[in-house]
Image (cartoon, rainbow, N blue to C red; front, side):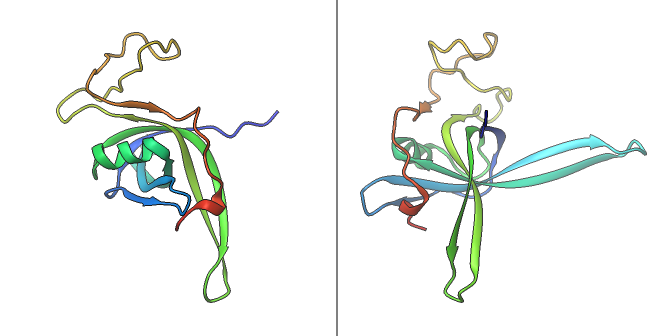
Length: 152
């Protein structure tokens, strides 16, 4: 059995770029920063930041472009994909991305750092507050184009 599933909670590094494929499919891309904090053997606090390339398709991409700005806290659920292409120099290039199946927007500024849960979903913590004005999108029913359809 194989599994390619990733959950990330982090902040958007720069404003979202929205493009449209020649077939008319919307696609958004943006970098997401996640932090890891730990104490080393000497008891000193250490912090490490990772940057992830996130790609969102369809209506969810358009909603992200509308509501998400640099610095916004997001939870991304998706899968990892590495695509490759030939650069104009003839060199083979690779890019690893997180293809988002679900994007959940974090709280507004000043609120506790909790994520809202969609109504009717039982797989989320029941004690997390539901924020009615935060869009929760799920594109599990949409067809996600392959890497060849990417406009960038």
